Image (cartoon, helix red, strand yellow):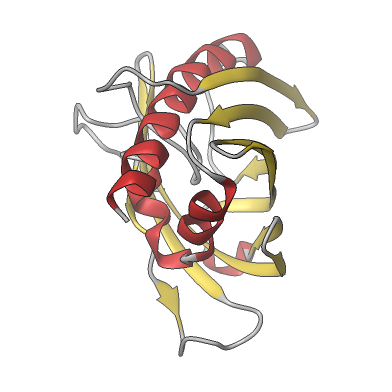
Length: 190
């Protein structure tokens, strides 16, 4: 774990967002955060005002994760392209209220299809004892896409007890709004 004092820090634990910079046509449908036995579970459902093909194309470009979230500074693939399972290194800078830190983790993309992928954190090369994230996309109509994101993580670093599920949920809602903006902007530009 690396401490960070950078004021542009955001909360993600690796996969999503920062504060919104644009007005979004998309919507945050659901955000839930829970904590038990040292593990956090995040569940997010969002609607993106972009066609499913464009959203899936962006999300399938595994090295572009950092473009979806301002909290992620790096997301390069490790090893040659096309190797299965793909491995990715993710570097984040995160702040919730007064608690700021940076984290690094490596993940393996363990399941991969156009509408679904799963990534598992490799604890030997990470600031986490455990991590599993699942992304699903679904077309709602010609111009809108639903993204479901579920993440279970167990940090290998201390998290102050005051940073509980309620505070995480509030931060994730803000960051989900920013991610919607980023995905919509990127799918229009591509």
